[in-house]
Image (cartoon, rainbow, N blue to C red; front, top):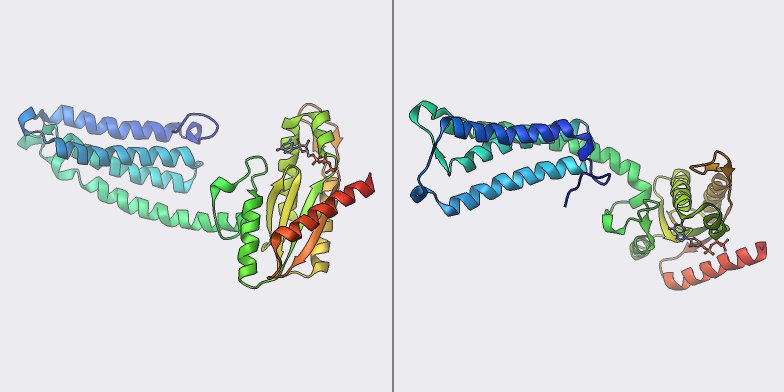
Length: 303
Ligand SMILES: Nc1nc2c(ncn2[C@@H]2O[C@H](COP(=O)(O)OP(=O)(O)OP(=O)(O)O)[C@@H](O)[C@H]2O)c(=O)[nH]1
């Protein structure tokens, strides 16, 4: 499930992984050093399953947090909080196998305190996470609006795919709001792929997606329509304002100096677009067909 590859954040968290290991090791050492093994007749299988699954799942949560999050305040607080909690539940689990003589009874006594401290630290972590998420939501506004569905993200551009764009348009139409929808098409992108390769093409698409996002208003949405096409949704905008925005995007694309990874020479491209002011009673599929035909005609007349 979690691997030590670039897809996880584990490589940034070697110290926290060591901390996690030490927490479990400390609980085991304490049990072995101060406890006496219980006889099998008094060991309860049901308790082992119950306490064991809590300890195992807490460990899994810690690893999941470290695999998912970059280093920072929230990650540190989460790991410390879960670490304290893990220490308590590990001792609790080991209690099923060990009993402590009177001289070491303090272990049983203290085992619940780290969990309480961990809960307090995790509460602080969740509050910080909330603040962090608010900042991130603002950054992602033009990519996702108010709905998150990671399955719908295109891995090359990091934008949502066309289905997401269509779903947001439908929602807007249902609420009776007007909007301008647009499609931007990169010119001669197949030629770019042929000359520079698909991997460079992917990088180029990614960079162009950033440019598109940067030129939009905070309330607009950009998605990847398909191939070298980008879909834009601009609510509450006049056709003239939308035209200005689209023109700015095309000018930015035209001025983007893309550099091949093995060559310092800049590569430039151009883009064309089509836009429609969508009314709430118009069928999106029909409008889209007209827009795509317009894009094709624009290409033919430029050729
Ligand atoms: N690198 C890369 N290329 C892609 C991707 N998806 C589609 N393509 C390529 O994008 C190109 C799109 O071709 P066309 O639709 O003919 O577009 P074009 O060559 O820009 O032609 P016009 O738009 O008519 O100027 C094709 O070569 C596809 O193989 C992708 O994810 N990455």
